Amino acid sequence: MMSERIAKVNRKTNETDIKMMLNLDGKGKADINTGVGFFDHMLEGFSRHGFFDLDLKVKGDIEVDNHHTIEDTGIVLGEAIKKAIGDKKRIRRYGSEIIPMDETLVLCAVDLCGRPYLSMNEEFLTRTVGGMETEMVREFFYAVSYSAGMNIHIKILDGKNAHHIIEAMFKSFARAMDVATAYDVRVSDVLSTKGTL
Image 1 (cartoon, rainbow, N blue to C red):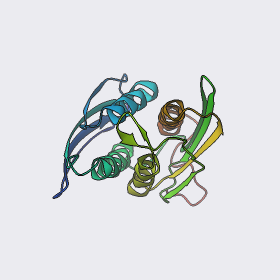
Image 2: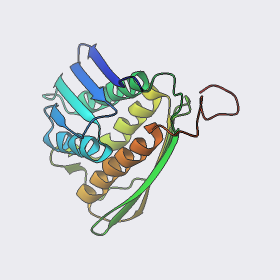
Image 3: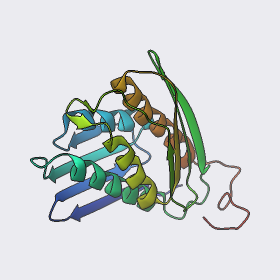
Image 4: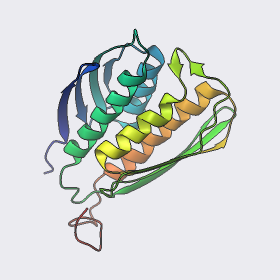
C-alpha cells in the first residue's frame, strides 16, 4: 500500500502569508482564497483537472499589486509538490497534455527530474485578465519550476483570447502533472539511469 502523498506548507514574509495543503491523490477538491479572483479560478482548474485536493489561503499585499501574491503562491506550490512526491520512487516522472479551449490549443510537458527549467512562448494581447496581470503567468510557473525542481514547457499552439490561453495553460499543467506523479507498476525504483532524481 502506498503512503499518502500530502504536503502542508506555510510561508510567511513581510509581503505574503500563505498556508497550503496539497494532496496529490485527491479528488479535485479545492478551497482557495488568494485575494485575486481570476488566479483563484485558475488554481481551482488546476485542482479539478489534476485530481489534486488543494486548500490554500493567502494574505498578500494586493493593495500594491498581485505580483507577490502570485509569485509566492508559485513558490509554495512548488515546495508542496516536491514534499508530497517525496523520493519519486515508482512514479512516471514525465507527463504531457494538449488542451483545447475554443480557438485556443496549449501543450504542457513536465519532467520531475530535480532540475528547474521553464520554457514558455506566451504572447498575450491584453495586459490583464480579471484583475490579474498576464505577465504574472510566467512568474507563477517559473516559481513552481524552481521551487519544485522540475522542467515545465508550455507552448501556445493556437489562440488569441488571453482568458482561454491562461486557462488552457493551467489545465494542461494539471493534466501533465497528474500523469507525471502517477505510480507505474513497471517502475520499481526511480525512472532514471542515474538511479536518482
